[in-house]
Length: 160
Image 1 (cartoon, rainbow, N blue to C red):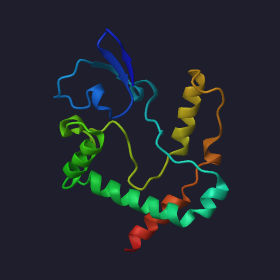
Image 2 (cartoon, rainbow, N blue to C red):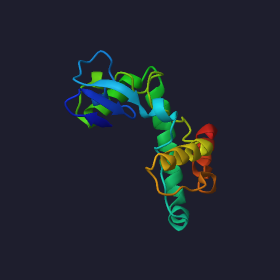
Image 3 (cartoon, one colour):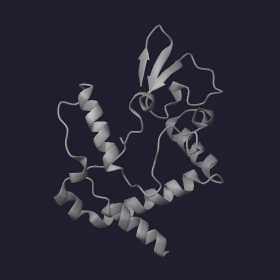
C-alpha cells in the first residue's frame, strides 16, 4: 500500500484495513485505485523452496497444504466466515469490522480453495512488473510451478 501523505489518498493492494476495506468504517484515506485496477488479477501469495528441501520435507508440506485447504474451506463457508474474521481481527489486533469483506465474495484477493496457482497469470504479473521496472529480470513461471503438493493434499481430503 502506498499512502500519499497530506493528500489523504492511498493506493492499495489487497485486503488492508487502512485502505478502507470496510466501506462503512470512517477512514482518513480515500482509495484511488488498487493494484488489481491497474494490473488485473495477480498471484502474489505462494510458497517457494529449493527442490532438495521440498523432497526432504514433502510429507510435512502435503500436510500443510491439506491444513490450508481445510482452513480456506472453513473460512469461506458463510456459516463460519464470521469466526474466521474474528480470528483475523484478533491476530491483526484490529476491530473485526475492518475485515468485513474478507472471506466473502467482496474480498479483493483471490485465494484458490485448493491452493492451485495460475502459472499464466503469474507469468503476466512477472512481465508487467518487469515492464514497469519493478523487476530487473523475469522467468518462465510454468517451469517452476509444481502443483503436485496441492493436488496430493486435495486428493487426500476427497478420500476422507
